[in-house]
Amino acid sequence: MAAIELRDVRKVYPGGVEAVKGVSLDIADGEFLVLVGPSGCGKSTLLRMVAGLETISAGMASIGGRVVNTLEPADRDIAMVFQNYALYPHMSVRQNLQYGLKNRKMEKAEIARRVAEAAEILQIAPFLDRKPRQLSGGQRQRVAMGRAIVREPSAFLFDEPLSNLDAKLRVQMRGEIRRLQRTLGTTSLYVTHDQLEAMTLADRLVVLNGGLVEQVGTPMELYERPASVFVASFIGSPSMNLIGIGSGAIEGLTGLGTMPGVPAGRPFTLGVRPEHLDVTEGESTAGEVTLLLTVTNVEVVGAESFVYGRLGGTGPDVAVRVSGYSRLEPGVTLRARARPGALHAFDASTGRRLT
Amino acid sequence: MVENRPWLSVATHVVLIIGLVIVLFPIWVAFVASTHPADRFVSGVVPLLPGTHLIGNYAAVLGEGARQNGLPPVGPMLVNSLVMALGIALGKIAISLISAFAIVYFRFPFRKIAFWIIFLTLMLPVEVRIVPTYQVIANLGMLNSYVGLTVPLIASATATFLYRQFFLTIPDELAEAARIDGAGPWKFLKDIVIPLSRTSTAALFVILFIYGWNQYLWPLLVTTDPDYYTVVMGIQRAARATDQEPLWNLVMAVAMLALLPPVIVVLAMQKLFVRGLVETEK
Image (cartoon, rainbow over all chains, first blue to last red):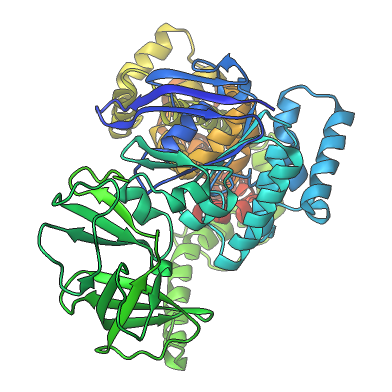
């Protein structure tokens, strides 16, 4: 159990490419922190620097109050779960679990106890004597988790551990990882590019973009008050509708008064989530922001449908969530009303939140 | 083959059988020749069916009988060949494994250059560098010794290259997982890399054993003492009769005996050998 601290950590590759451009983070003891961002944002590099698999070009990383910049991965008291599991293919599951402990010259009885305990927790006891290739993807994933658990490290590092699983198994393993982490109370750093995975797992979420932290907060903070256009479009699915507002009126958009925090006449980006738009029949009342859309496409996912339409017939695409089965046909005009208080405003040039 | 037409399988079998006959016929002739008495060949007609002197001929080459014809006994020559072939095969594997490990898993200055220099030696087979190599071995006093027979042939670019290619297919995460598990380079090599390359090693061993076994020119040069003759060059010694007809029946018996060990090695390691060539265990 330990807190992890990063101070202005940078990674510059020999070619001069700067993958991480100064990241500072405090991860509390027992916290589940998720690093999320598109590919190439530096999230994996950051994790690998904490693990010690990449050198830290500048800045400081500490685990449990101990600066680890120059320590070997094995001496950092961490355990890592890899995307492709990285199980030793020629060793049985039991040997895979034991290997790290044996290298630490741990007593045989203690190793056996820990392996049995991990196998119990992860329900892999029946496969202990099998080889990894005889296991299914989900079972391999459990073994990879087991290898991390037996170490009883002060921190778990996860590098997209669920990306190789099919969608259904991913949801199941997601739940298991969360439950396991709660039970063990081990500080965890988890990298993913899947915003849904990030939202459901995280105590706190870090959105990275281009090697810099875009926003840090609880999943709901990021959802409700995204700090930038980037976060707004990254968190939530389908992503937030963004409409550029200039000085003139926007066709199809009515009722937009002055936004709090936005000086009158200044161009900005208006954001509203698809789930905060309601289809309405009647005329708009005063003070209500209404969007007139020409439907282009309808996606039915079962419990809900997403209706896509062009604002004012020719403007930007806007998505609206409709509960149940939408029978709207393309070409139909749709009136959608934004819920009060659900509007976001971002600076038109920097993309930062204005309100 | 996607097609499954009867005439096609007949045709493929005919081609295969013709190939088989071409390969096996000389071996058959050699075997048949080794079962006839010596005077059978004076007529110039080679028999195609086995004769009656099988046991006599083989007893002659394995025992003392050959010595009167200027032949060293075959038994010790087989042992010499075995020592040489094993020495070369195991030596090559040990050196190539370690050098490929260094090239793939360590970053050191001139790593690329080192690899290319090793690769360049592919262009310098034994025959090309034989005079300087002989000079070196002679000056080191290694003529007529097992060391002299094996050491100059041990360095192997081919095996290094094969190991390098195999190591490159081992996922980096495995090395990283081992690092986190507290395995240093030696432990990683011993516990993970060597067990994973088991099938490749078996395939290489077979190839290198046969390479070592079939060495002809080099043993011919460095051994003048019959105690260090290898069997492959022994065949040549046997066929080089000065004042008489060569004893072809005995020459062929030696040749048949020289064929056996490589065949045994191939058969024994067949399963691993094929797996090593066609698939990588992952």
